[in-house]
Image (cartoon, rainbow, N blue to C red; front, side, top):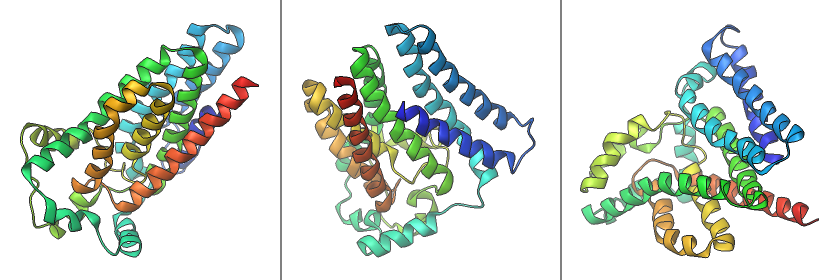
Length: 275
């Protein structure tokens, strides 16, 4: 399936880069070799046992790999890359938007707005895993459509993480900001938790934006009630990535482009299922 090709290509590409930098018996090499073996095993399962549960196992592989490889990049990215690319992304923002939108938004900072946008940013994980679980347990055709799009998106995004690693304006350009982001409970929680939930390379593209827009538009077609519930927090989330200084504007543009590509992939899967 398309997402297996994309995700598998990412695993092989990163494995080759790792083998150029570390010994074959490195733990990180085994993580990627094991991931590749799991991908192949998932394909084999449905070849020999074409059932709903076999397909669910095959699809469930990708949320697991998504999480494991995301965390592993904390250590792998410094091995296969020389430094971060924040300066490049900052310059691209200057070229595209005339400067940092995060700096421009300092004039509208308020505790209530910061709290609301912190909630929206945290909301992403809730929306992501609810979507992953509910679509996995739906009909096989809908499950395949959703997973093919979402994990093609993640595979493309992880290529970006490894080729253009960056930490974001809130760390790399902290001296450019004069107004502190003060909020309440959600803001404090996000500030405390964020260092534990980043791999310090997960900036370009913004998969927060890419995955959220993809899920939202998928729900608009297939789960209208959830679309309406998630619409406002999702729009707030896109704004929050800039307001909270986690992303550059170019990250958002790249994320929106990937979301559009993932939706086109989903549409092609739907058409092939109908045929």
